Image 1 (cartoon, protein in one colour):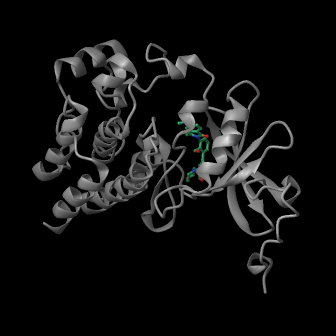
Image 2 (cartoon, helix red, strand yellow; image 1 turned 120 degrees about the horizontal axis):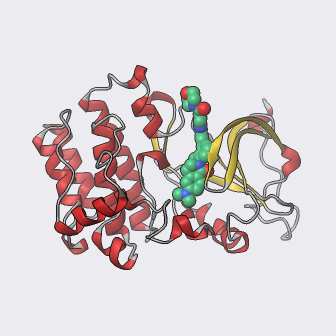
Length: 282
Ligand SMILES: CN(C)c1ccc2c(c1)CCN(c1cccc(-c3cc(Nc4ccc(C(=O)N5CCOCC5)cn4)c(=O)n(C)c3)c1CO)C2=O
């Protein structure tokens, strides 16, 4: 049998936690880019498993809290969530090891000239896949806090998965974490987050509506060149994004449901899934 089929060796006693990955079993390959926590590289685990390895830059993440949370995150398993395989936390920098998605972020994928011709049916299917992943997180009372096309990844055959869910809680850069900061995702935030940073699965639903708009505009920037304060003003006034040309009225109505001012008026992801399935059928 190829080494891939070799069953994982039983963890050596209780000391070796199953979410702890032995770095000697990881070969680091090319750089995939840089994110909130520093450089991310492609990796090969145990000679055959493709992975992505975040190498935590010092001072970017509250590491001990994250390592504690990693035990919970490895249990979140769904076909539309980027799987966390484990962490290498016995050395610095710590590594976060996840499943590898070969086409990179959904935002760049939509903007890429060769995918610029994707039809509405494929766009709707991609939104549905994100919705499935988010419905799973909602069911497990897990809030993403930074859902956007840039934080979803594309694999083979237009498979789309939600990535980096929950990580916003461990970012130390207050330019990112405070709603007044330059890096705060204002254009994906509902009124209750802008005013009280009150995150919930219903604030993820608002962000999902903006993600749908990103997909149907093939990766346009929401609100164009408006500044963050101008967007805050618009959102507080109840003004929402216009209908993308590639988008039917039915689909635009689903987006608008995500942008209702009151969180409780917005549909849950498990309801959104039915709404999108209804549109798909038409
Ligand atoms: C706090 N929050 C919300 C965070 C925290 C960290 C990160 C992010 C958000 C999102 C950005 N990010 C990050 C940074 C760097 C890499 C990855 C990243 C990139 C992957 N894949 C690829 C594949 C190909 C390419 C590529 O170069 N191309 C060009 C040629 O055509 C195909 C595509 C790029 N990435 C991948 O599989 N994972 C799991 C993560 C990721 C995603 O993980 C982070 O590391």
